[in-house]
Every structure is written in structure tokens, then in C-alpha cells.
Image (cartoon, rainbow, N blue to C red; front, side, top):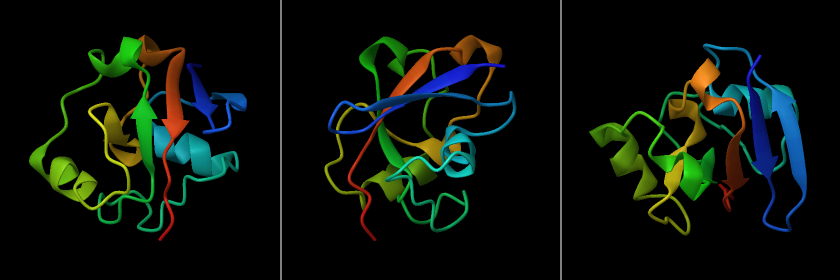
Length: 106
């Protein structure tokens, strides 16, 4: 099972086994990762699962679609490496993915 490393802004890290086919958001919610609120449940409608993807992994993800891009425009502190974790499906190729939780206050 691929491992996803969730990092908090303070540097605290948790490594979670996330099943293939689940999203990075589901892995966070299922394991109580603070800051991934996922208020819309993964419908790409709230931006409360915003995270920063480690630069080494950005190019390995599927490109974001227009809907995710528009939703990220509503997120706090958007950066070039910003993604919505509900839109990142876990695959074997993402084993070791590192994401840093962004400010996701509703």
C-alpha cells in the first residue's frame, strides 16, 4: 500500500498507508490529519483540503483540471504547488508522496 507523508506547517510529519484508488484527502480524513477539513466530502467544491505538494512530486501528478484550478482560486495562500487533495488519486507510483497541509479555515 502506498505511503503518503502529511506534513504540518510546524514540520510535524505523519506517514499513512493509503489504499490505491483512494484520494490523498480520504487518507487524511480517515486518519485524523489536522487541517484537512474536506467540508464538501471530496466534491471539489470547497478548497478545505488544500495542500502544497512537495516540489519533487508536482510533475508526477495528473494535471489539475479547470474545476480544481478555479476552486484553488478561493483557497488561502495559493502557491504554484497547491493542489486539492480530493483530486489526487493514490497510485503505486505515488508511494512516498509528501504534502504539506495548507491553511484551510472555513
